[in-house]
Length: 160
Image (cartoon, rainbow, N blue to C red; front, side, top):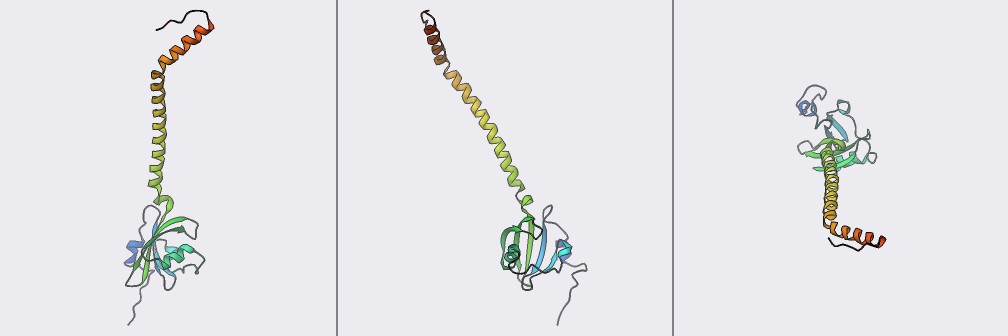
């Protein structure tokens, strides 16, 4: 007994593969034993073979990987965060790809805000310390000016 599915026709995988992961990410279902993409969000990749062993390290890792996350580069040169999960019934791999720029954008935004906040607080703390030191050292500055004035002139030094 055998069965055939026309992957070009509408099927149960279209709902998953028709959507994007995030804004620009996508899904790919591959048959690692044949090194072939079964279906993908990018319809141009349906039934396309994977690069030969050793040409694309990320594709090799996706074929070997079993439920893990990999950061690599697509054949188009885009850096992506990839999660691979095994579909045990068919021995296929479901791959979810998300460009690292999009995946790590929230972390970069937090880093930028932290840097800006740190700079602002540093300037604020520096100004506050300058004011406190000026206030605490004011009597010393007054005494120094009086001594300097007394040394330059022959007037006696007056205590305040």
